[in-house]
Image 1 (tube, rainbow, N blue to C red):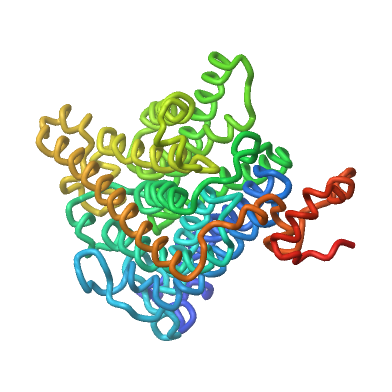
Image 2: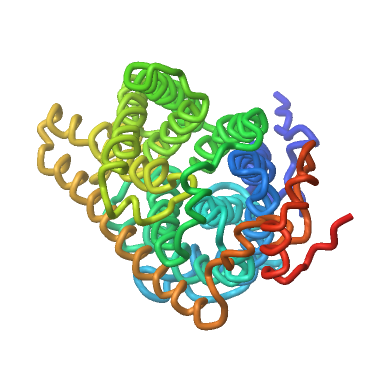
Length: 470
């Protein structure tokens, strides 16, 4: 009896460009997911920030995003990636090295069936959006030159430490068994605390800007918010590093939690302020996206609904009630409220992950159940000790990230301040984009009359008269 040898279809045969360890489907999805995350920053947050601020700050706010994205991507490839995911140097930092060599980039990555080049890109856009989120706390007054220096310093001495500690298999929190599916700690808690700390050191906007800071284009802001929401499909769906049922679960949980959070925030605005606020709805959307991030692929759909209700109400309460009654919060000018939308929502998601994480889903994601078990299931399965241990590890992660970012961000701001002021001058802040960049977003009827005002001309001359009126 003749036996026909089995042969692969020609398009699936391994070759130099598609080695046998690489899964083409996984690689294609990972590149797609990374691009979706990149679109969240460019143009997502770029136009969200640009539309959310006063017209005079639209260019500066968008430019802070554009610069941060470009700077981080370059620094990430040159040294940041290996600090974050390279060979262990100390328990919270990798050995410094480049991620530019063609041979290294085409080797299989430490997790997943795709090359290092794909992982460098995927993790690079995550690092970039973290700095972009920090910018949200500093809009409307930070010296752009100081921002140019702050970005690579914070990436190097804060982000890489958190990323290695939590996401790298050799990191000390990773070994403890912390659950951070896609960045509730590494990205959102970090950016929220760092942004609030940096806002303290930079100082506030002008008094009139703090009292009245209307969005210059709400429709543009909504367009950016929409890109942010849909882009989160790649943000959470790409973190299993494989096209799997767990990736699908992460995606649907992301949208369920976000919708529940937005609707909860909206209802609270209607009940207490008697008006549905579109800006409030966007805040609720963001807190939902952030809260589900550490848990996306390790919780059930019903848990995602509960997390959405919590993320739409607890940050609402801290922002609308506690913030307005706290002298400390009032002293720090956090322009986009990143403390509430990212730090509080991120830590909330981390703690709720420790409650609702399902052992079976943790096994799908981490490859082992180990100590990964939410308190709810620990109590049900008579693994009470493991459930409480998981909550403890999640809390240790919160404390570590908060302390690290307060200390590192403060040191970086003090160092930058030695070389240049962190805050624009009063005269520059009176004018905005024209003083900072010599450009403005768009002219509206009546602007020229405003610019003929003697106060405007005086402020312009004090700011250096950089702009020649046409």
